[in-house]
Length: 232
Image: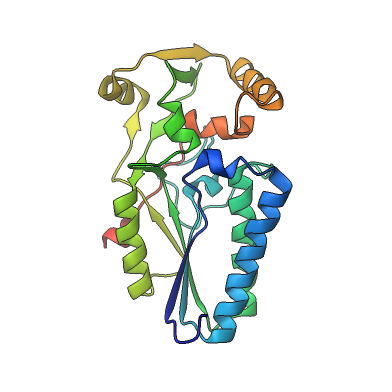
């Protein structure tokens, strides 16, 4: 099926949280890893010139000590648990192995900021569907978004031009918590970190919260990226 194809694009990141979490963690992880391995092997065998894979800037992890912005070559510090971010880290592992095993295959990973747009359903978008914006005492979140149409432009550019191994995509700069509250008209509810994460863990265990408690960090701590290479 890939014979005669010059560029193959795979969007590994999911933008339908309900559908993603309808499958339990182990088979979902196995399926996405098998897809990654199959695409890499088939692309190399068929002589595909370039493989472009969309994961997420979430693989860098969200942490209070993250620099703003994160460099494209920053370490991947996200939690490797049963959530969808763990799935993307597993995909990144396959791609890292592919660079060594198939040096002739040009491989570009695109890591977008929080994706927004019509029909997008993620942990971050659901954060804004709640009655209040959850904050943690002492935390200083920095909000950055990537519209799905801008992501499509980035993918198109990466398909046409070899821009290196990793590209990050996001709006220029970021918003503070106060700016987000002013723009959305939403008010905050503030908890201690232990109370917020403890409650999230219990709700996830009982099936009330769809994503693991670790993904709450992406609404509490910065994971801002720089799109300087794409803009240039």
